[in-house]
Image (cartoon, rainbow, N blue to C red):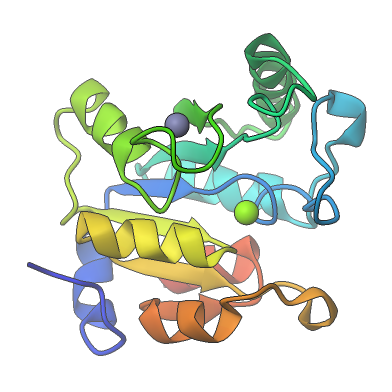
Length: 195
Ligand SMILES: [Mg+2]
Ligand SMILES: [Zn+2]
């Protein structure tokens, strides 16, 4: 089973047709630990993300967001709030000729479902909705160890977004070593992918 290790990465990324993006810390500024993004007012784009997504769209790739939203389970916001954020996100992207093809989120708490990353339920749901998608033509781009572990569990390659060195999270070293590549931002990851 392909595992997306560092050495096989350059060979497989030419075959990538489906790009799975984590949301918080990849598309938008991650909130501080213990804080959650439950409203569009708290959603702040990282620089250049709109154009990076537009470039993926133009390249013919399908762009899918997969995000853990445990704040729903904790009662900080509702599933409808998450949907509203994704609607606003889509409207904003449309102004930049960019779009997300589908959103999947896990509203559950830890250890109570099969979809919270590093589990693969969200990806499997996407594979049902996009029958052409599989672990071999997909890539996962995320800023958490759980994103990279989900990719490994799926058998798909991954790019770890390192982000701001001042706010490194636990598991960063492990994520770096498990990922097929490490990039500073989504903008850089897309450059690598479309090179
Ligand atoms: Mg994240
Ligand atoms: Zn879940």
